[in-house]
Amino acid sequence: MKKRILNKCMNLIKTSNLDYTEEKLEEIEYGLEGIYILITKSIIIFTLAYLLGVFKELLIFLIIYNFIRMPSFGLHATKSSYCLISSLILFFLGMYISLLFELSIYTKLILGIYCIIRIYMNAPADTYKRPIVSKKRRETYKFISTVIAISFVFGSLFIKNTFISNSLIMTLFIQNLMISPYVYKLFKLPYNNYKQYIIDNGLNV
Image 1 (cartoon, rainbow, N blue to C red):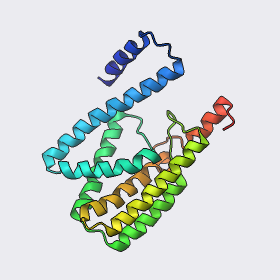
Image 2: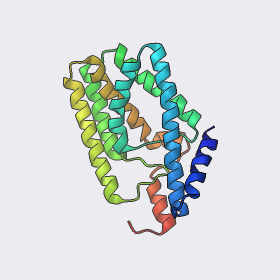
Image 3: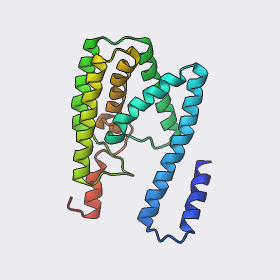
């Protein structure tokens, strides 16, 4: 299904009057694939959340998560099925922990400080399909990611709503896994892909 839809979209783009290079067409296809996966994955995840009676809670959890995900990027599964399974496990587990347990201030502080340090060290984590070549962009994303991580930890310590307070720490912890070089290695995916891109293209960035 995915391949058929993507092929139809790419054929329409190729037959248009726009003069795209092969590199540009690859970028477009990658973007379309990301949109397709996002839509189909979201439908399945939110349908399941609705059936389990936690639609609102999961929506809040994912909104919080995306604030830290966007500037720090992170691992993408090689297959959409792997992406769906890992998303179901991580998001529902994180959401239920945030919903059912009350993390102590010490737990949140220790986890929070650890995540801030790791995010500062590892963000942004690119992929081989989307290397972040520009040094300035990498530094900007790192700064934004670190500031958001710090604000998440402070928020978790002072926000009275237990679910939101816990969610700030749990989403931070999940994203820490998604940008970890050890997790990339576990899934046999290349890390710091911009370095290889620079070498392959003979760039001086």
